[in-house]
Each structure stands twice: as C-alpha cells, then as structure tokens.
Image: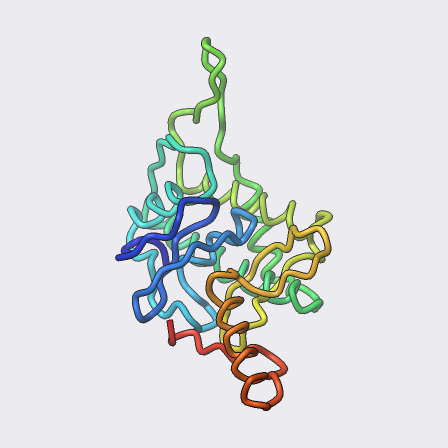
Length: 219
C-alpha cells in the first residue's frame, strides 16, 4: 500500500509501503507490472486493504509508479475494474514464474488481451523534450502495464522473478543483482529482521530457521 506514511524513507526508486502497524519502507520490485501488485495483496499477506477503490486511486498509483511524471490520465469505472482483473492475473503469473510453475492460460489471456489495446504514447516537443501525449486513458495505461509484463515474463529476466524469502511476506521482485542471489524484498525490512533473528539464534545456541520466519505484521 502506498502513501500515508508518518516516517517517509529516504528518496529512491520504488514505492513507499506501509505495514499494518504503520511503519514504512521503500520497495522497488524492478518492473512496472509488479508495481501494480502493490495496490493490494491478492495472496492475503501483508497488504489486507484494497487501494484501488475509485478511478482516482488508479490515477494516483500511476503518479507514484516508475512511469515518467506529467501523465494526463483519465480513468473510468470500467477501466478501474479491468485494472483489478489485470492485477489478479499478474499476481498469479508472477507467483507461478517465481516458483518455476506453468502459467495458467486464463491469466495469460487476460494479459495478452489487455496488451492488445494501444498503449500510452509519448511525443517530442519542438524544444526536444519528451512528454506524454494528451488524451491518456486507463485502457492505455493498462495496455502499457500488460506490455511490460509480456516483456518481463518472456525476456532475459523471466528467471529472475523472485518471492521474498521471509516466511509470511508476499512481495515479489526482479533480482537484478549481478550474482542473482537476492533473497529479500527490502534489506531494510525483511533482510535486517532476518539478520537480527539469525544473530539471536547464534548467541542463544539455537539453530537458524530454514526460512526467515519474519511476521509481516510485526513492523
């Protein structure tokens, strides 16, 4: 869930997320299509609230996303519902890809049908600047998101889609690290908490847990 934070993390790529207890951290999933998943959690943990309640919420998400600023977006009710449908399909595709499973045809159909619409259009001004073309719609936005998903899940990073290894964390990301061994959604959240638990386990003489066991509602 984005925004509404009382303590905003340092600026950087990604979106600011807030845990159920109100603490914030910045998370960059590495792709536009994965940022759409952050508007809710179809898996149930840890983001229990739907943030796409009205068309203005999708506009707000686009403004906070990795898309360039200045998008003159207009979204209708039907487009908002299609955004939720696309989000659900992307969630299942992402989860399956991260686990090395086959993708459901019904989900790839949703992505492909959404991508078939004309995407957002950028144009060049006489001064040589790149700006968004007027008349951007929710349908064009979703097409852009779906095309990003096609590029991600069929491209060189398809095998680098990861699920955070924290026991109850539902966040997914593209592992762009050189060795390809990124384990956590954010080092400042699940990574650091795992380090603390591992340190306590070593100092107490107990074995380190197989998975981090980080309770997502504890932060």
